Length: 133
Image 1 (cartoon, helix red, strand yellow):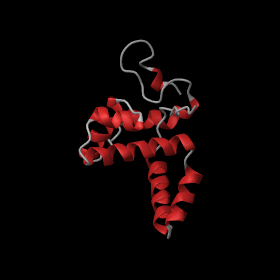
Image 2 (cartoon, one colour; image 1 turned 60 degrees about the vertical axis):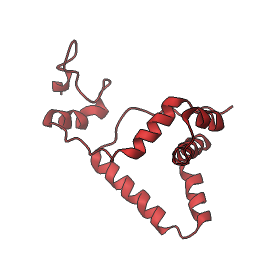
Image 3 (cartoon, one colour; image 1 turned 90 degrees about the horizontal axis):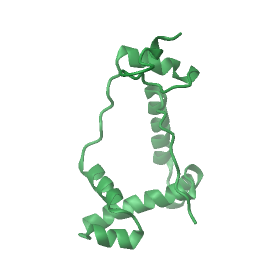
């Protein structure tokens, strides 16, 4: 039985994220063979993550071949919402990162020291916590 991975909702800082992606793309660009790419993916991704990637690529391929959601779901054991998510993701342009407000930038810098979410709540109890030092 294969268990799918849960991902933390904590985001990386923009500068770190950009450096990571640049390094990853550089690694991929330097690979000269198909076996090298396979080795890189085996090092980077768990078996569960590789299966998720394979299924998403299969969904994209099967949609392009004209298969219906129900057929795709039966072939590769995915739910219609996953198929819809992949289909919509390939059709729309990539999202641009939203510029953070000054308060959000300050809060992100302090987030690692806190026990509550990185972004301040603007309603209800605790809405002024981001001002704590």
